[in-house]
Every structure is written in C-alpha cells, then in structure tokens.
Length: 313
Image (cartoon, rainbow, N blue to C red; front, side):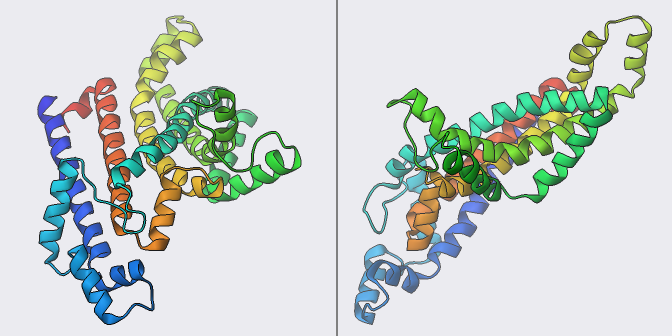
C-alpha cells in the first residue's frame, strides 16, 4: 500500500512539473507580447526592449522557469504585472470562494446521486427512465446555460436569490448561503445527473451478483442487503465517478463564477488572461492542477480502502 501511494505521489509531481513547464513556455515564450501588454500597444520599441529586460524575459526560458520554480517552493509566485499585488495573496482571497462552491456541490452530488441512483436501480420504472433522461440532458446542457436560466427564473422573475455578487460567511451566514445557492444549483445539474446514472449502473451490476441472491435467499432484510452490502460493493466505481465529477466541478466553477460575478479563481483567471497578466495566470493554473491531482490521489486512496485489488495499482 505504501509503495503504491509513493508511486502515485511521484506521478502526481511529474505531471505537475510537466504541466507547469508547458504552461510556462506558452505564457512566457512571447516576451515582446508580454511587454506590450504591460506598456500598451502604442509603446515604442525602445520601451518594449527595456521592459523585456526589466522583467527578465530576455533570459533563456529554462533559467526563467528554474527561478519561478524556486519561488513556488518557497511560496513566492511572483507579483502581478499590472497591480503589483503578490500572486499568493491574490489567490489566498480567491481560492476559498472556489473551494466553497466545489465542496458544497460535491457533498450535495454525493447525497442526491446516491439516493437517486439506488432508487432507479432498485425500483426501476419511471424513476429509472427519469434518471436516464436527466443524464442525457445534464451532459448536453452546459452549466452556464443552466446558470442563466436560474438567474432569470429565481433571481429576476421571483427575486428569491441575488443574481450576482458574493457575501462572505464572516459577514453574514444567511447572505453567504443566499449568494452561493444559484451557483451551486447550476453546478449540480450536470454532476448529479451524470453521477446518478453511473451509480445506477454500479448498483445494477452488484444486484446481479450471486452473493446478493444468496443474502436474499437467506431472508436478510432488503434494506440491509442494499445499504450494507450492495452499496459497499458499488463504492469503488462510485468513488471513481465522484473523483471525475470533482474535476468537472472545478472546470465548471471557473465559468460559473464569471456568470455570477463571484470573486473566485474563475474571475481572477479570466481577468488575468484578458490583461495578459502572466504571473497571475501561472499561479491560477498551478493551483487548479494541484487541486485536480489532490482529488485524484484522494479518490485513489478511498478506492483502495474499499477495494483491496486497487491497492497494488
């Protein structure tokens, strides 16, 4: 188990280094473009060359990447080209907003998708058909379309929730819940539909196994069969689906934050990309990749805990 864990950690570090280097080359490889983004399109060539030298963009990319990597190890992600603010401090105020959306959406996805998936597999009928239809619709309709529909239905027409804006839980817990309700609902639409469909398939596969028929033949109550034995044996595929859904939620949260004007990583990344603020973009990419890798690692560990065969992979 320990050896397998070390292998996964090493692979995660390698992936992080490769993604960081490729992103760094793509972002920092155009020194004149970065300098003009900072100075403006009408800047003179002499000023552009001076800005390139000031930012250190005239040095080899490997040297620049090495310095950036050393800064990452020490917690220094550089400063914004436009505001001068530390990238680390900018991320410190934005990451909690994004993580709150992801965690809330994931918890609700787990509860709702398990209940719906089990009901569809066990009872079938109209519940099964509804789950399959919702899975198709959830995969076909992008989250930002759902978000716009929710804004019109619940923020503009009914005025139950604010259309945009964010309230910190430190200021008002009720205001925070109100400000994140619509974004979380927009993220849930696709994730619940997909996860419920996958749980349904995993439960149906488990129900067809011999040990389930044996338990039923022995007179074990159906409730115990489902919740103690079937769910436990369906947990492996379910955890894999949830780890994939978490990654999808990260990508969806970046877009949803822009729609609802939430001060999270999505808004920060979008603004930095439009301005050409390369250090901020690099910091956002780094954090997103780390979150994805951590989610994958936790998913593998959870899967190994319930499935002994996965411990040696």
